[in-house]
Image 1 (cartoon, rainbow, N blue to C red):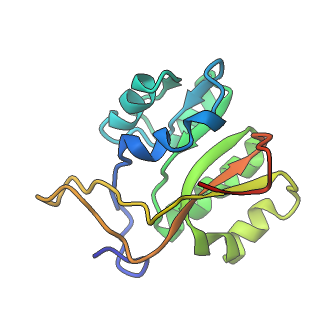
Image 2: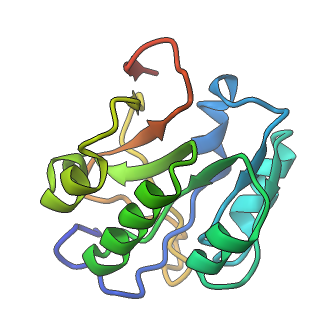
Length: 165
């Protein structure tokens, strides 16, 4: 079982399609979505199958944020502190709408608070049950983490600041 204390810098867990399908009704199909954490490209393919115009490239996430044309960032980023901290500060700097999957405890971290203290547009979508991820190094292809994740949203104009699925 994965937990936040055992993740390493190169943690790789992919997002099953149902995770995005659960919130599809909150996503504008007319927007261009970017997944900057390309991985094996399966997340982008899943989002396209759900009817979203999603792009990404097998390049560094920062280069993707900086060089690709998009409206909204949608991703399941690496949860390792050093990668996540840098990513959150980059999100803060570019000030574009996003929806990211994070362990709920991360919103209480010093680095999250410092990155988004000025934002009043952070919203949460709380899933019905614990999110399981796909671990490509696990033969059962499932990873049931010991931590609870939520969708952290910014500038998505959701109908409430906290939504429960």
